[in-house]
Amino acid sequence: MTQQAERMRRIPLSRDRVLRAAVALADEVGIEALSMRRLAQELGVVPMALYKHVAGKEELLDAMVDALVSEIDPPVPGAGWRDAVRLRVLSARAALLRHPWARQVLESRTNKTPAVLGYMDSFIGMFLAGGFSVDLTHHVMHALGSRMWGFTQELFDDAAASAEQPADFPPEAQAAMLREMAERYPNILKVAAASAHEDSVVGRGCDDQFEFEFALDLLLAGFERLHRQHWTSTPKSL
Image 1 (cartoon, rainbow, N blue to C red):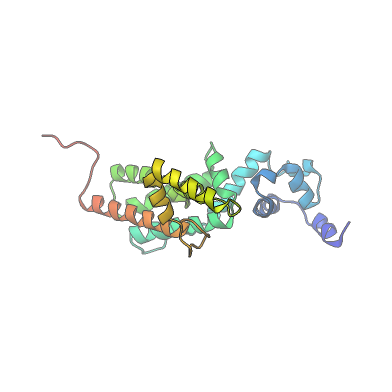
Image 2 (cartoon, helix red, strand yellow; image 1 turned 90 degrees about the vertical axis):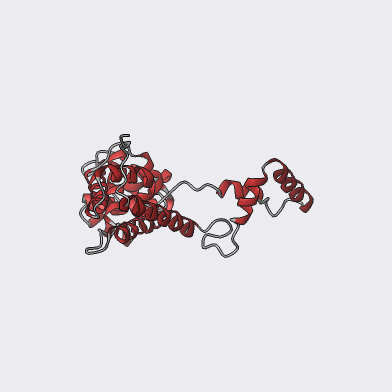
């Protein structure tokens, strides 16, 4: 046994230590490769030792989501609702980008933990504190959807990928496929090609951070307009 493994074995096992190791392991190998057995090996213990701290894989994943929530900055005191919401969403996105497994795990959770419910409650509270009606806040939360957690489904990634052929394709084949795309799906090709930014922070394709913030700012501007208009979903009586 190596000295490092021996030192790890001597450190008392705790729920916090199990959780920190699980997050680090998922960051390194991906969520699919995370198992109780693999985690036990990482900690230098037998698998059964983990079950004293987490009931199983599902409880472990719930706890990992809670750890993600703890990394999201709280609302900025004294900030207007719009700044507070924007900063909170971007903090959530930063946490999500630090942990590539987080989106998949968030989407897989069917039961919301107290930490998740607390985040949602606090998030809603930013709008209510800004003077939004309960009615408007309800619809605002629907509009934000997963953006509250810092992610959205990307629209043009697949289209852009299908418009660009692998480098080992003969130039004639690439040209022929692009011509077919132009004939069959001209609008998709036009927009997908426009998204192929050479200077994208994520490589060729859309600049995810820019697109995310662009859509977020559009939503916040729309929410502000409705709030000022005292919008309500209740139809006005004639």
